[in-house]
Amino acid sequence: MTTAPREKKRGGWLKEEFGNPERRTAYYMVLPALLIIMIVAVYPVLNSIWLSLHAATITATGEFVGFENYVEMFGNDDFISGLKNTVIFTVVSVFFEFIIGLGIALAINRAFRGRGLVRAAVLVPWAFPTVISAAMWRLMFQDQIGVINYVANGIGLISEPILSDATLLLIGSILVDVWKTTPFMALLLLAGLQTIPGEVYEAARVDGANVLQRFFLITMPLLKSTILVAVLFRTMDSYRVFDLFWVMSNRQLESLSTFVYQGVRISQLQFAQGNAAAVFIFVTAFLLALFFIYGLGMQTSTED
Amino acid sequence: MASATASGSGSKGNFNMVLFYVFLIGFVLVSLFPLLWVFKMSIVTRSDLFQSPVTTLVAPPIADSYNTIFANPDFRRALLNSTIIAGITTIICLFFGAIAAYAIARLRFRLKSVVMTTILAISFFPAVAIIAPLFLLFSKVGLINTYWSVIITDVVFALPLTIWILVSFFKELPKDLEEAARVDGATTIQAFRKVIVPLAAPGVFTTAILTFIFAWNEFLFAATFLFDASTQPVTVAIPNFATVYTVDYGAQAAASVVVTIPLVILVLIFQRRIVSGLTAGAVKG
Image (tube, rainbow over all chains, first blue to last red; front, side, top):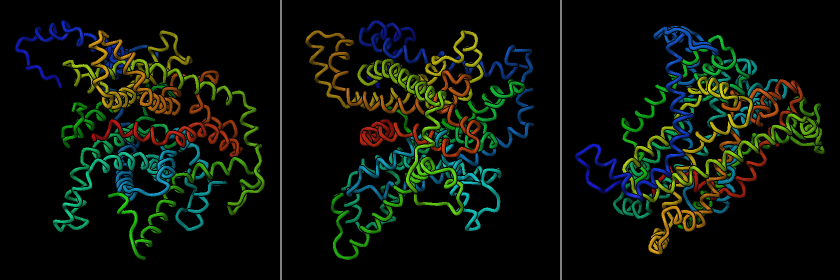
């Protein structure tokens, strides 16, 4: 944080910032990164918004149609099912990832033999390309040779092949996501747990606090900021799910992102609606992040 | 305190230890199961693959599936493409990322929180929201079907990660050394190049691994901008194998294993570093 007092005049601080050689250097140093981000991310978003308000095609912007594309989009069954699947997928998978991840973090928050092995095993699913893990799980869900399909069928859990049923596909996707990203959640939470000093627990024990009290009155409050960061990252990530659905269901399962991709890249007839959906994802993701940061009081500052 | 919890005394302590290790083994097995199972699928004969009930024991392993995929020039090409894309992305990211991260970690300036917020916002940014305008833009300037279309977009989305991790590494370095360099008359840039960069080498290396994994795994941009096998990375090529090798599941499994192995090796060697890098930005300690 800058310690200098706030300037009264508006133009004053700009001159001061750029008059100071160290500060000027600092701006030059962050400028390249910011410029790339502006050109490749910010400009296209504005362009997306512009396109979504026109009868746009892949070759021409077309005439201005106001919110017509959005109205059509909300009347499109594919979009609605994409929205529904995305919301269910995000809520359910993040919920399980958090619960299981916290359980694992609490269990391995101690010194034990083979710690390195466990850490490596935990990282393997995380390091997999999502499309490859989707392809691997697709092979295991497959109805002729898939081990999971075989077992689930054997114990009477399913009556039809997993890959040809929309609900089972969604459940399967959630399972794969939980498998793949719970380790990441556990690692973040474990790192957070390790910053809580042991003396705090000792003191609570001396004062007669039981396990549950220690968990809810010490662990959870002190872990809050880590939990928010981890859950925010996972939520934003799940919300834009694309690779997993696209590959594992072989394009059958719709999410918001696959709807956009279908519209603007595969069947370019729905180009304008695809852009409207793109803007919808952008705006809702933005609101979601704001909710975490302001609504839940998450700290994003890196200053110390 | 940690060792005290682990070594319980008496039979109850021993029983807890056994439970704990059973839990750990189960956890490790669940994490690794898909890789092991798909590996098994890749080394059995086709008739074994279709056997019902599913066989678990492996007859003498065979390399047929691996021969099939390595005989496919598109697969070899895709491996090379992935390496090129991820490699160049990593280098560019580290260059711009290190410079920006140094300014953020060490220098004072007013717009720092604005800069950090912008960078953070990108890591939450739904990439799918910009593929249409970027597709139009890249078509106009002739970047479609080139490595650069994917490298540019990968750099933008990997930069937040790179900067975030590097900032936390740079902050840990002792400040005295730079100040000594300044006193001796070094400029900001010289202090960065001669003092910080060599000291930060381990942190930079960790960041490089994470950025490389990120770029190696990227799918959306590659699937959007690359139409041709000559530039497609493995993430685009392998799902296509489901149509190329329709019922040759062994070949599909082998391709998945080959692509994952470099990552598994990286993870096994550098697990400690990767964990410290991943958790660096998220946890204040």
